[in-house]
Length: 386
Image (cartoon, rainbow, N blue to C red; front, side, top):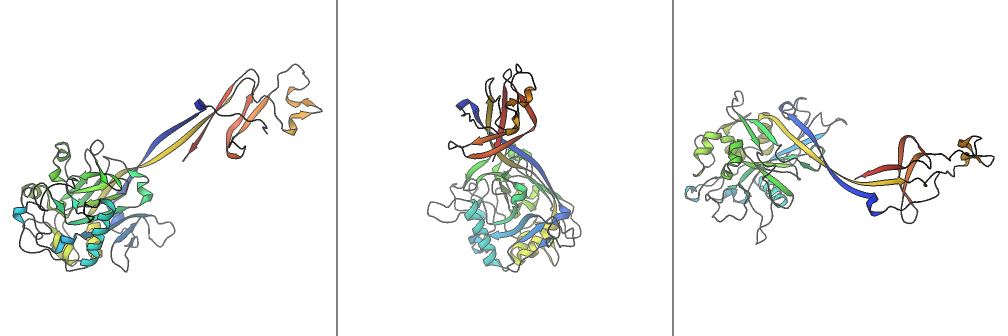
Protein backbone atom coordinates (compact mmCIF):
# COMPACT_ATOMS: atom_id res chain seq x y z
CA UNK A 1 0.00 0.00 0.00
CA UNK A 2 1.53 3.26 -1.10
CA UNK A 3 1.66 6.12 1.38
CA UNK A 4 3.44 8.60 -0.87
CA UNK A 5 1.78 10.68 -3.58
CA UNK A 6 3.10 12.10 -6.80
CA UNK A 7 1.55 15.19 -8.38
CA UNK A 8 0.67 15.15 -12.07
CA UNK A 9 2.42 17.74 -14.22
CA UNK A 10 0.84 19.35 -17.30
CA UNK A 11 2.51 16.89 -19.66
CA UNK A 12 1.26 13.95 -17.59
CA UNK A 13 -2.40 14.43 -18.59
CA UNK A 14 -3.87 14.24 -22.10
CA UNK A 15 -7.43 14.20 -23.50
CA UNK A 16 -8.69 12.38 -26.57
CA UNK A 17 -11.95 12.05 -28.50
CA UNK A 18 -12.79 8.83 -30.33
CA UNK A 19 -15.77 8.12 -32.60
CA UNK A 20 -16.92 4.50 -32.57
CA UNK A 21 -19.25 3.27 -35.32
CA UNK A 22 -21.55 0.26 -35.44
CA UNK A 23 -23.42 -1.03 -38.49
CA UNK A 24 -27.18 -1.24 -37.91
CA UNK A 25 -29.25 -3.30 -40.39
CA UNK A 26 -33.03 -3.48 -40.00
CA UNK A 27 -34.74 -5.96 -42.29
CA UNK A 28 -38.23 -5.59 -43.68
CA UNK A 29 -39.32 -8.86 -42.08
CA UNK A 30 -38.98 -7.30 -38.65
CA UNK A 31 -40.85 -4.14 -39.62
CA UNK A 32 -43.66 -6.06 -41.32
CA UNK A 33 -44.41 -8.01 -38.13
CA UNK A 34 -42.36 -11.19 -38.30
CA UNK A 35 -43.79 -12.37 -34.96
CA UNK A 36 -47.42 -12.31 -36.15
CA UNK A 37 -47.48 -8.58 -35.41
CA UNK A 38 -46.68 -9.19 -31.75
CA UNK A 39 -43.60 -7.05 -32.23
CA UNK A 40 -45.72 -4.17 -33.53
CA UNK A 41 -47.24 -2.12 -30.75
CA UNK A 42 -50.26 0.10 -31.35
CA UNK A 43 -51.71 2.52 -28.83
CA UNK A 44 -55.17 3.67 -27.85
CA UNK A 45 -54.30 7.23 -28.87
CA UNK A 46 -53.54 6.01 -32.40
CA UNK A 47 -50.85 8.61 -33.06
CA UNK A 48 -47.96 6.29 -33.94
CA UNK A 49 -46.82 2.68 -34.07
CA UNK A 50 -43.76 1.21 -32.36
CA UNK A 51 -41.67 -1.58 -33.87
CA UNK A 52 -39.72 -3.98 -31.66
CA UNK A 53 -37.19 -6.65 -32.58
CA UNK A 54 -39.12 -9.26 -30.56
CA UNK A 55 -42.66 -9.56 -29.17
CA UNK A 56 -42.96 -6.36 -27.17
CA UNK A 57 -44.37 -8.06 -24.08
CA UNK A 58 -41.14 -10.01 -23.71
CA UNK A 59 -38.43 -8.71 -21.40
CA UNK A 60 -35.95 -9.41 -24.21
CA UNK A 61 -37.64 -7.00 -26.63
CA UNK A 62 -35.81 -3.89 -27.81
CA UNK A 63 -37.57 -0.85 -29.22
CA UNK A 64 -36.33 -0.13 -32.76
CA UNK A 65 -38.33 2.76 -34.20
CA UNK A 66 -41.69 4.53 -34.35
CA UNK A 67 -43.73 5.35 -37.47
CA UNK A 68 -46.27 8.13 -37.90
CA UNK A 69 -47.52 10.68 -40.44
CA UNK A 70 -48.43 14.35 -40.15
CA UNK A 71 -49.85 17.23 -42.15
CA UNK A 72 -49.07 20.92 -41.88
CA UNK A 73 -51.58 23.47 -40.69
CA UNK A 74 -51.99 24.52 -44.32
CA UNK A 75 -52.99 20.96 -45.11
CA UNK A 76 -56.61 22.06 -45.29
CA UNK A 77 -55.94 25.23 -47.24
CA UNK A 78 -56.06 25.68 -50.98
CA UNK A 79 -52.90 24.43 -52.59
CA UNK A 80 -51.81 22.26 -49.71
CA UNK A 81 -50.32 18.93 -50.62
CA UNK A 82 -48.62 20.50 -53.60
CA UNK A 83 -45.00 20.25 -54.49
CA UNK A 84 -44.30 22.72 -57.24
CA UNK A 85 -44.71 26.25 -58.47
CA UNK A 86 -47.13 28.88 -57.32
CA UNK A 87 -48.77 29.03 -60.75
CA UNK A 88 -49.97 25.45 -60.33
CA UNK A 89 -51.77 25.92 -57.02
CA UNK A 90 -55.29 24.55 -57.42
CA UNK A 91 -58.48 26.06 -56.15
CA UNK A 92 -59.48 22.86 -54.36
CA UNK A 93 -58.23 21.96 -50.91
CA UNK A 94 -56.43 18.88 -49.66
CA UNK A 95 -58.85 17.95 -46.93
CA UNK A 96 -57.86 15.49 -44.23
CA UNK A 97 -60.87 13.41 -43.29
CA UNK A 98 -59.31 11.01 -40.79
CA UNK A 99 -57.58 12.12 -37.57
CA UNK A 100 -56.83 15.59 -38.90
CA UNK A 101 -56.19 17.10 -35.48
CA UNK A 102 -53.77 14.34 -34.50
CA UNK A 103 -51.95 14.46 -37.83
CA UNK A 104 -51.59 18.20 -37.57
CA UNK A 105 -50.38 17.99 -33.97
CA UNK A 106 -47.78 15.40 -34.96
CA UNK A 107 -46.52 17.59 -37.80
CA UNK A 108 -46.35 20.65 -35.56
CA UNK A 109 -44.59 18.76 -32.80
CA UNK A 110 -41.93 17.43 -35.16
CA UNK A 111 -41.50 20.87 -36.72
CA UNK A 112 -41.11 22.45 -33.29
CA UNK A 113 -38.36 19.99 -32.40
CA UNK A 114 -36.50 19.82 -35.71
CA UNK A 115 -36.98 23.29 -37.20
CA UNK A 116 -36.26 26.74 -35.79
CA UNK A 117 -39.19 29.09 -35.34
CA UNK A 118 -39.46 31.88 -37.89
CA UNK A 119 -38.81 35.52 -37.05
CA UNK A 120 -42.43 35.96 -35.98
CA UNK A 121 -42.25 33.05 -33.57
CA UNK A 122 -44.38 30.76 -35.73
CA UNK A 123 -43.80 27.10 -36.50
CA UNK A 124 -42.09 26.53 -39.83
CA UNK A 125 -42.94 24.00 -42.51
CA UNK A 126 -40.47 21.30 -43.54
CA UNK A 127 -38.49 22.58 -46.50
CA UNK A 128 -37.26 20.54 -49.43
CA UNK A 129 -33.77 21.98 -49.78
CA UNK A 130 -33.26 22.96 -46.13
CA UNK A 131 -33.08 26.67 -46.97
CA UNK A 132 -35.77 27.87 -44.60
CA UNK A 133 -35.48 31.47 -45.67
CA UNK A 134 -36.23 31.12 -49.39
CA UNK A 135 -38.33 33.87 -50.82
CA UNK A 136 -41.69 32.69 -52.12
CA UNK A 137 -45.38 32.34 -51.53
CA UNK A 138 -45.05 28.77 -50.37
CA UNK A 139 -45.19 26.96 -53.71
CA UNK A 140 -42.63 28.69 -55.89
CA UNK A 141 -39.66 27.04 -57.54
CA UNK A 142 -37.42 28.48 -54.82
CA UNK A 143 -39.62 27.58 -51.89
CA UNK A 144 -40.94 24.04 -52.06
CA UNK A 145 -42.33 22.65 -48.85
CA UNK A 146 -43.35 19.27 -47.47
CA UNK A 147 -46.90 19.90 -46.31
CA UNK A 148 -47.31 16.21 -45.55
CA UNK A 149 -44.53 14.11 -44.06
CA UNK A 150 -43.84 10.58 -42.90
CA UNK A 151 -41.79 10.42 -39.70
CA UNK A 152 -39.59 7.48 -38.70
CA UNK A 153 -38.14 8.02 -35.24
CA UNK A 154 -35.29 5.59 -34.47
CA UNK A 155 -34.55 4.41 -30.96
CA UNK A 156 -31.57 5.86 -29.11
CA UNK A 157 -30.52 2.26 -28.50
CA UNK A 158 -29.69 2.05 -32.21
CA UNK A 159 -28.55 5.57 -33.09
CA UNK A 160 -26.45 6.09 -29.93
CA UNK A 161 -25.04 9.64 -30.07
CA UNK A 162 -25.87 10.17 -33.75
CA UNK A 163 -26.28 8.55 -37.15
CA UNK A 164 -23.08 8.64 -39.18
CA UNK A 165 -23.35 11.08 -42.07
CA UNK A 166 -23.44 9.61 -45.56
CA UNK A 167 -24.29 6.11 -44.31
CA UNK A 168 -28.09 6.22 -44.03
CA UNK A 169 -30.47 4.48 -46.45
CA UNK A 170 -34.04 3.16 -46.50
CA UNK A 171 -35.43 0.89 -49.21
CA UNK A 172 -39.16 0.52 -49.90
CA UNK A 173 -41.39 -1.25 -52.36
CA UNK A 174 -42.95 1.72 -54.06
CA UNK A 175 -45.14 0.54 -56.92
CA UNK A 176 -48.10 -1.75 -57.45
CA UNK A 177 -50.85 -2.82 -55.10
CA UNK A 178 -50.88 -4.84 -51.92
CA UNK A 179 -50.47 -8.12 -53.78
CA UNK A 180 -48.14 -6.92 -56.54
CA UNK A 181 -45.41 -4.50 -55.55
CA UNK A 182 -42.60 -4.53 -58.06
CA UNK A 183 -40.71 -1.24 -57.94
CA UNK A 184 -38.12 -0.55 -55.26
CA UNK A 185 -37.31 2.87 -53.91
CA UNK A 186 -34.08 3.61 -52.03
CA UNK A 187 -33.69 6.87 -50.14
CA UNK A 188 -30.21 7.77 -48.92
CA UNK A 189 -28.25 10.77 -47.70
CA UNK A 190 -25.85 10.67 -50.63
CA UNK A 191 -22.88 13.02 -50.23
CA UNK A 192 -23.90 14.09 -46.72
CA UNK A 193 -20.50 13.20 -45.24
CA UNK A 194 -19.14 16.40 -46.78
CA UNK A 195 -22.34 18.37 -47.40
CA UNK A 196 -24.92 18.65 -44.65
CA UNK A 197 -27.01 21.37 -43.04
CA UNK A 198 -26.74 22.81 -39.53
CA UNK A 199 -29.78 25.09 -39.23
CA UNK A 200 -31.74 22.73 -37.00
CA UNK A 201 -32.04 23.11 -33.21
CA UNK A 202 -31.24 19.40 -32.89
CA UNK A 203 -27.94 19.66 -34.74
CA UNK A 204 -26.99 18.46 -38.21
CA UNK A 205 -29.12 16.88 -40.91
CA UNK A 206 -28.77 15.70 -44.50
CA UNK A 207 -31.08 15.64 -47.49
CA UNK A 208 -32.46 12.32 -48.72
CA UNK A 209 -32.27 11.55 -52.44
CA UNK A 210 -33.31 8.64 -54.61
CA UNK A 211 -30.11 8.80 -56.70
CA UNK A 212 -26.55 9.73 -55.85
CA UNK A 213 -26.27 11.79 -59.04
CA UNK A 214 -28.86 14.23 -57.69
CA UNK A 215 -26.74 14.92 -54.63
CA UNK A 216 -23.43 15.20 -56.47
CA UNK A 217 -25.06 17.54 -59.00
CA UNK A 218 -26.46 19.70 -56.23
CA UNK A 219 -30.04 19.15 -57.37
CA UNK A 220 -31.70 20.04 -54.08
CA UNK A 221 -35.05 20.32 -55.87
CA UNK A 222 -34.95 16.52 -56.10
CA UNK A 223 -34.65 16.01 -52.38
CA UNK A 224 -37.45 13.85 -50.99
CA UNK A 225 -36.75 14.14 -47.26
CA UNK A 226 -34.23 14.69 -44.51
CA UNK A 227 -32.47 12.63 -41.87
CA UNK A 228 -31.61 14.38 -38.60
CA UNK A 229 -28.44 12.75 -37.34
CA UNK A 230 -28.39 13.64 -33.64
CA UNK A 231 -32.16 13.35 -33.22
CA UNK A 232 -32.29 10.03 -35.10
CA UNK A 233 -35.38 11.00 -37.12
CA UNK A 234 -36.07 10.53 -40.83
CA UNK A 235 -38.61 12.86 -42.47
CA UNK A 236 -39.92 11.55 -45.80
CA UNK A 237 -42.17 13.36 -48.25
CA UNK A 238 -44.95 11.24 -49.81
CA UNK A 239 -43.71 12.71 -53.08
CA UNK A 240 -40.84 10.19 -52.92
CA UNK A 241 -43.22 7.37 -53.83
CA UNK A 242 -44.22 8.92 -57.13
CA UNK A 243 -41.27 7.37 -58.91
CA UNK A 244 -38.29 9.03 -60.55
CA UNK A 245 -39.88 9.60 -63.96
CA UNK A 246 -42.93 11.26 -62.49
CA UNK A 247 -40.94 13.37 -60.06
CA UNK A 248 -38.63 14.61 -62.79
CA UNK A 249 -41.57 15.54 -64.95
CA UNK A 250 -43.20 17.46 -62.12
CA UNK A 251 -40.10 19.35 -60.97
CA UNK A 252 -41.39 22.69 -62.20
CA UNK A 253 -45.09 21.97 -61.93
CA UNK A 254 -47.69 21.54 -59.24
CA UNK A 255 -48.19 18.06 -57.88
CA UNK A 256 -51.40 17.57 -56.00
CA UNK A 257 -53.03 14.69 -54.11
CA UNK A 258 -54.58 12.20 -56.48
CA UNK A 259 -52.60 13.59 -59.43
CA UNK A 260 -52.43 11.40 -62.52
CA UNK A 261 -49.43 9.13 -62.25
CA UNK A 262 -49.49 8.88 -58.49
CA UNK A 263 -48.68 5.34 -57.33
CA UNK A 264 -51.36 3.12 -55.90
CA UNK A 265 -50.85 2.86 -52.17
CA UNK A 266 -51.86 -0.70 -51.44
CA UNK A 267 -53.18 -0.83 -47.89
CA UNK A 268 -55.56 -3.55 -46.84
CA UNK A 269 -58.98 -2.07 -47.43
CA UNK A 270 -57.51 1.07 -49.04
CA UNK A 271 -56.55 0.94 -52.71
CA UNK A 272 -55.81 4.54 -53.53
CA UNK A 273 -52.98 7.03 -54.00
CA UNK A 274 -50.58 7.74 -51.18
CA UNK A 275 -52.01 11.23 -50.64
CA UNK A 276 -55.53 9.87 -50.39
CA UNK A 277 -54.24 7.28 -47.95
CA UNK A 278 -52.80 10.08 -45.81
CA UNK A 279 -56.07 11.98 -45.82
CA UNK A 280 -58.55 9.10 -45.60
CA UNK A 281 -56.73 6.48 -43.53
CA UNK A 282 -55.99 6.39 -39.83
CA UNK A 283 -52.37 6.72 -38.76
CA UNK A 284 -52.27 3.05 -37.77
CA UNK A 285 -53.62 1.97 -41.14
CA UNK A 286 -51.13 4.15 -42.98
CA UNK A 287 -48.28 2.85 -40.80
CA UNK A 288 -49.32 -0.71 -41.64
CA UNK A 289 -48.96 0.06 -45.33
CA UNK A 290 -45.58 1.71 -44.86
CA UNK A 291 -44.20 -1.11 -42.72
CA UNK A 292 -45.23 -3.73 -45.25
CA UNK A 293 -43.44 -1.79 -47.98
CA UNK A 294 -40.21 -1.46 -46.02
CA UNK A 295 -37.46 -3.67 -47.43
CA UNK A 296 -34.38 -2.59 -45.50
CA UNK A 297 -32.90 0.16 -43.34
CA UNK A 298 -29.14 0.53 -43.11
CA UNK A 299 -27.01 3.04 -41.23
CA UNK A 300 -23.97 3.32 -39.01
CA UNK A 301 -24.40 4.82 -35.59
CA UNK A 302 -21.80 6.88 -33.75
CA UNK A 303 -20.68 6.76 -30.13
CA UNK A 304 -18.51 9.65 -29.01
CA UNK A 305 -15.98 8.44 -26.49
CA UNK A 306 -14.14 11.16 -24.55
CA UNK A 307 -11.09 10.06 -22.59
CA UNK A 308 -8.65 11.55 -20.15
CA UNK A 309 -5.30 9.77 -20.09
CA UNK A 310 -3.02 9.96 -17.05
CA UNK A 311 0.62 9.00 -17.47
CA UNK A 312 1.71 7.70 -14.08
CA UNK A 313 5.48 7.84 -14.14
CA UNK A 314 7.65 5.98 -11.63
CA UNK A 315 11.21 7.21 -11.98
CA UNK A 316 14.28 5.34 -10.78
CA UNK A 317 14.01 6.65 -7.25
CA UNK A 318 10.22 6.34 -6.94
CA UNK A 319 8.19 3.57 -5.35
CA UNK A 320 11.02 1.15 -4.65
CA UNK A 321 9.68 0.43 -1.19
CA UNK A 322 6.36 -0.74 0.16
CA UNK A 323 4.56 -0.04 3.42
CA UNK A 324 2.73 -3.35 3.19
CA UNK A 325 3.28 -5.13 6.57
CA UNK A 326 4.29 -8.32 4.75
CA UNK A 327 7.12 -6.47 2.98
CA UNK A 328 9.28 -6.82 6.09
CA UNK A 329 10.17 -9.80 8.21
CA UNK A 330 12.34 -9.43 11.31
CA UNK A 331 13.04 -5.83 10.27
CA UNK A 332 14.48 -7.03 6.97
CA UNK A 333 13.12 -6.59 3.45
CA UNK A 334 11.63 -9.96 2.64
CA UNK A 335 12.26 -9.82 -1.12
CA UNK A 336 16.02 -9.27 -0.60
CA UNK A 337 16.39 -12.61 1.10
CA UNK A 338 19.53 -12.71 3.14
CA UNK A 339 21.55 -10.53 0.78
CA UNK A 340 21.99 -7.10 2.40
CA UNK A 341 23.54 -5.71 -0.80
CA UNK A 342 20.59 -6.60 -3.03
CA UNK A 343 18.49 -3.76 -4.38
CA UNK A 344 15.08 -3.23 -2.84
CA UNK A 345 12.29 -4.53 -5.04
CA UNK A 346 8.59 -3.69 -5.14
CA UNK A 347 5.76 -4.89 -7.36
CA UNK A 348 3.04 -2.69 -8.79
CA UNK A 349 -0.48 -4.12 -8.77
CA UNK A 350 -2.68 -1.05 -8.39
CA UNK A 351 -2.67 2.62 -9.36
CA UNK A 352 -4.81 5.06 -7.40
CA UNK A 353 -5.83 8.53 -8.61
CA UNK A 354 -6.35 11.01 -5.77
CA UNK A 355 -7.86 14.45 -5.44
CA UNK A 356 -5.79 17.41 -4.18
CA UNK A 357 -7.14 16.51 -0.71
CA UNK A 358 -5.77 12.97 -1.01
CA UNK A 359 -9.24 11.50 -1.55
CA UNK A 360 -9.22 8.33 -3.62
CA UNK A 361 -11.20 8.95 -6.82
CA UNK A 362 -10.34 6.04 -9.11
CA UNK A 363 -8.45 2.76 -9.03
CA UNK A 364 -6.74 0.96 -11.90
CA UNK A 365 -5.49 -2.61 -11.78
CA UNK A 366 -2.66 -4.08 -13.84
CA UNK A 367 -3.02 -7.51 -15.42
CA UNK A 368 0.02 -8.87 -13.52
CA UNK A 369 2.43 -7.44 -10.91
CA UNK A 370 5.09 -5.17 -12.42
CA UNK A 371 8.58 -5.31 -10.94
CA UNK A 372 10.09 -1.98 -9.89
CA UNK A 373 13.72 -1.49 -8.82
CA UNK A 374 16.06 1.51 -8.56
CA UNK A 375 17.52 0.48 -11.91
CA UNK A 376 14.35 0.77 -13.99
CA UNK A 377 11.53 3.22 -14.71
CA UNK A 378 7.86 2.56 -15.34
CA UNK A 379 5.13 4.60 -17.00
CA UNK A 380 1.57 3.36 -16.48
CA UNK A 381 -1.07 4.74 -18.81
CA UNK A 382 -4.44 5.10 -17.05
CA UNK A 383 -7.42 6.05 -19.21
CA UNK A 384 -10.80 7.25 -17.96
CA UNK A 385 -13.60 7.09 -20.53
CA UNK A 386 -16.81 9.09 -20.31
